Length: 115
Image (cartoon, rainbow, N blue to C red):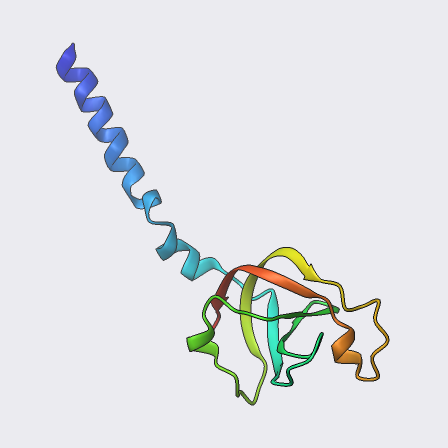
């Protein structure tokens, strides 16, 4: 009886092994949900940061988890998968002449480049 239980447990563990590596499956199934469309290097309140388009919304962030891979200078929009964190700064209520500066800042919990 003990051998039968051990055999069943071993078969269960072996069957579950492929699902223990989420990164392999996630890489193949993650779809872009946003685009990094620009970077503003100006150092002022509501200026600095990456400009991100998510659907019809545009947001900004002052830091990215994979900044070395993305950089500061890029020509075309970069498709990415982003998981947003909390709102860090409310810039939409301020009166800026540049409409990009009116975009709120968000923390980025996760960022994956989609190629």
